[in-house]
Length: 318
Image (cartoon, rainbow, N blue to C red; front, side, top):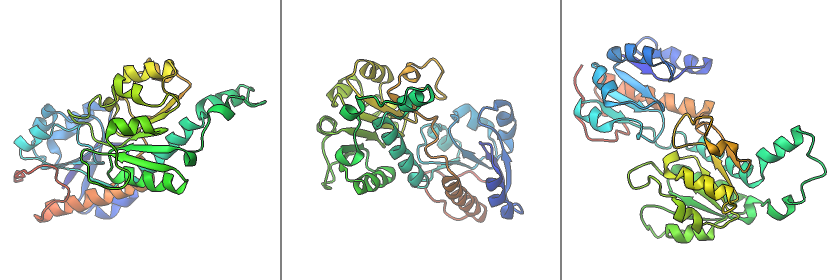
């Protein structure tokens, strides 16, 4: 079985997959190497997909492909309708990256709340002492904050466990009122929280969910953290709120356009801490991804039911 792995492997990935080499033929392609990707598509039985969008035209070229396996949960970068039409299964890996994304979320939360980028820059420039007196007026402990989680899946529940252990009060909202303790309607939760963290997929219903009006409903000293998908936040409105002091800070791992261009105004603000969509990207998550990916390839080879298919589809024969 030939797999097109759309990422650049490290030694640990190769070592993990080596015992499967008698039946699993893995070909790697960097996400920015479109020439190699297009050349490899027609030979692939399975595509291990990360973030580079996989279009209907791409899938049309993948004439042998039977399964696109998302390394992660969100399948918004895959043309699922085209895959279904072509008889290609689409599967994801819900929860596999949750420990890493949860820790990365708390990292951004702390960095933004504690003004880490500005303090790091000041220290490197010799301005770290005496301390900025505004720290004692603005910097907060997570444990003294109310943290609001928008979306309440695997990652959010792990974040809740971590920040609750630090002493925070935790509220959440989701697409349904399931009656669980701490649930609030979205607008009510936004007004009540010191930290708001996003944990939901990008859909037509969640695009620009945090628009100018909802950002204005947040406390002026609140922190926004986004490790889900960039377009869930109206980026222009976020820039304006941060510049005008209507929002204290933001910690962002995701952006409206990725990779985010160097002229993105968010990158000029010292009350924003950023990472390039990598909160999921750890050795531990990669091991979990590969375990699930290899298992589904084995199931496909043996004619068994696949796990975590996101649509009903009759997978085309070889």
